[in-house]
Image (cartoon, rainbow over all chains, first blue to last red; front, side, top):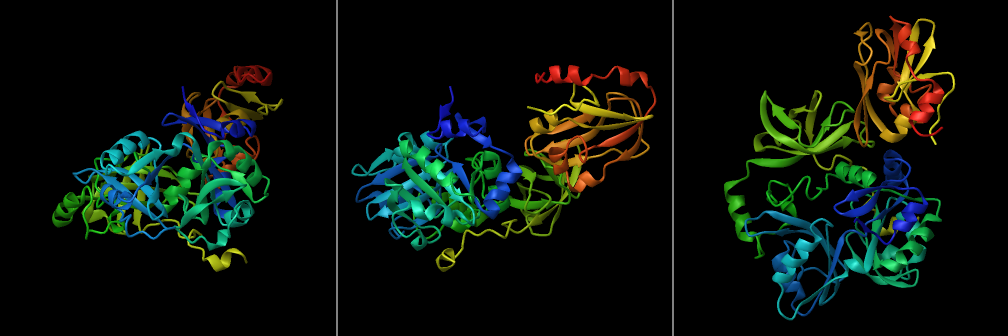
Length: 368
Length: 128
């Protein structure tokens, strides 16, 4: 029996194609994936992200506890700011990636992936002080992502504070259509956008309210995967997992080494000895998709494998990510990808592949 | 509801065939493009290539899947729609016209007779 989100009736009414995503019934597309991708790059797209895990962590030691179990320094985070981080095991393997929002001096919201949410909750809880409490809000709270250059215009009137005051990677409590909510200026698309965390029962009304704006349309998991791949945001379970460390996943730039956290000692050892492979972004010379799992070959020798691949509407060619031996993880390197039916030529490119994202739009420009 | 044009012949694998003298114009049906989703890549065969009925002659990739298109009749490929290599979305937008794939010079006219009628195809896809 698949778990349904708070918006499942809305999806049914507008004819979404639903799929099983890690046990959740979620829309993969409404009209078409390419049109929904364009909707997000050009206007505003609404994504049902109720499946993701939301943990509220509270107590005087909440910041110190999270700083130990996450790679981000939660204690140093200012109230109202968000930060990207990882959950590592003692060996430095990636258990999940997360965004934490500091809501108050002693209160944080930790957002994790759906598939790993149960494991993450147990892992974090096991590392908390006795006076720190953690509540899994995922059962009664849902989440809606509003993403795209028009997202401010679409959302602003539904929020009871000045949405233009919220900077990139900031988040705070407020009311959304009169209901208590948490709104953050974050996302998984590279565009200006917001994530709205609120009681699930209030989400259908918000979804309908936002869709009444001509600049907004719903988008499914298919478009979401394309958008994040163009930005080279890793997808947990596809591009990164517990068998890879942050250095080979090219995520170590988010991690400061000057403090202790779970996996820090392993990370220092990894830094010292170097890594044999790295997660790179590549662009193909064709529209043909390089499927995940395909071998990557250089000078006739297998040097790695594809972890994500798709046709990119923004670049007009196929793109992807994959691990290659470190000596080939250099922008400009030509790779051969042994796809199911044919060999493709690809070039290692700097990240992100898509450089037109609006996520860093300055506040002053929002009201223009 | 998928569109089924009355003046064409069809295959069970969702190709359509329009007979123009001794040439068969071939594409995929509205039902097929709808099931595939947005088409992102098409690989066309070489002109002058001889094909047997049932050979895979075209690769169509969409945001969701990769599929083969099979020769509905035997013969020689005399023309391919190179315009869709750069604009594969034409297969979604206009599968029966702008989205055509190949023209095959028919070597055995009896193979045309064996193809499905519009009525039979409509029944096949459950939209009769």
